[in-house]
Image 1 (cartoon, rainbow, N blue to C red):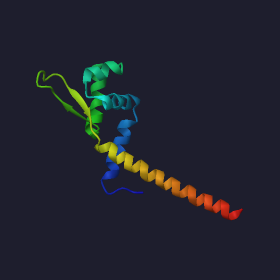
Image 2: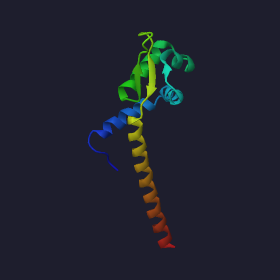
Image 3: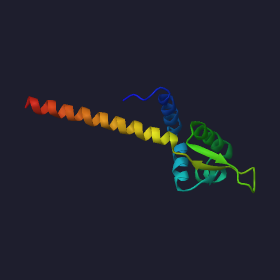
Image 4: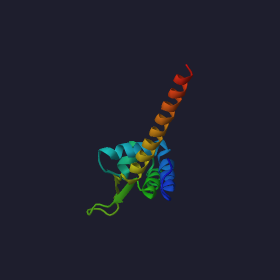
Length: 114
């Protein structure tokens, strides 16, 4: 259930980024559509600077990307990216399969003893 070299570090960074409930909530909001940083801050009841710090973490991990609309370079719009979550889903699936295999072996062991 190990991942190829280099992938474990990315998975670790993704899990650390998602450990914060405000960042998870931001991800949930971004699932529906891109949002401006100010919209996210308002929805999460955070100051703009606090939201900026959370978005920086999500951006550095690759969970979100940032763009500026042509009309106003001061506005930052954030979009969800799937790359890091794809790796997380694959890891969770491998873990699930491992547990299922262990439980099946345990069941066989218990039934053999009865």
